[in-house]
Image (tube, rainbow, N blue to C red):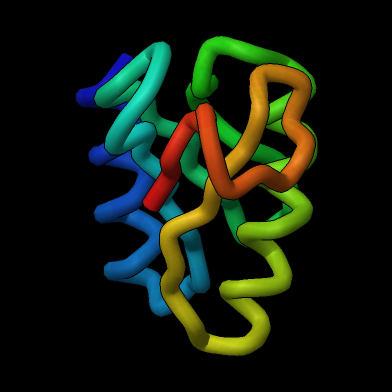
Length: 88
């Protein structure tokens, strides 16, 4: 799946389309990736559909604002500061 995500990421960038790539950097599923595509759909999973849904919404906001960030979520996709899944 990682190769498919990176190929899609690369192809969209070549075409000048905005995309956002999230990676779990700490916590369960470390290394998992989710790519937000220009049409709002996503490719990949962070291992939890609730987090995928919340994160794709948050990524769209970050992409529109032209920002990057590290986000912290609980196991149900809720924003948290401690005991979290950290995603860049």
